[in-house]
Image (tube, rainbow, N blue to C red):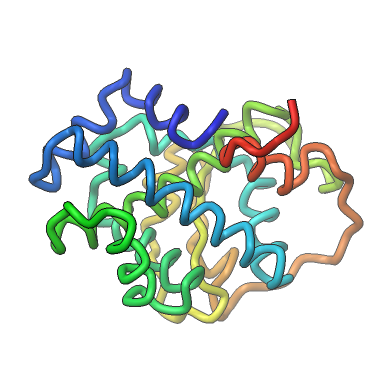
Length: 221
């Protein structure tokens, strides 16, 4: 399912209205802006994960830990301060800096006021990672193919992508994304204190290529 279809279905179809209300823009503006912003971020994240082994491994680890995208279903979480901080960290990592990311987003959503655009871009980044997680969780209930099996039990958790070089990353991420399991901070996946897991050979189903293809609408039917 494409990322915009996932967002359309979230919060009982009210995600765009809730986001618009939070940031002082119209529902039509929010939907139009996210329709441009989210695929652009997803494409850039796909490129980053293809060129940067650390990002690739960290994203696989994040998905394998049971991420399910549930943050998309809670307006206060998705539009809250923690999600904004998480999204800004994603933008910083994927685009090299948040300012560079915002310059790109400005060209995609020219009618959005600057203050709202900054927030909407961060939420878009968080939503993209949530959509990846939801797609993976829907496609395959087991850990991502090629990953070692873990003991079952407890609810899914959702981390989100942050810079492998970023210091002082957010500690509340797992509280927002995974209320039913022990929370792990950004640094457990991508931060300066990240401990690399043992390298393992990963199978191709579902692969990151499959997941990105699904949310970008490029996966062969």
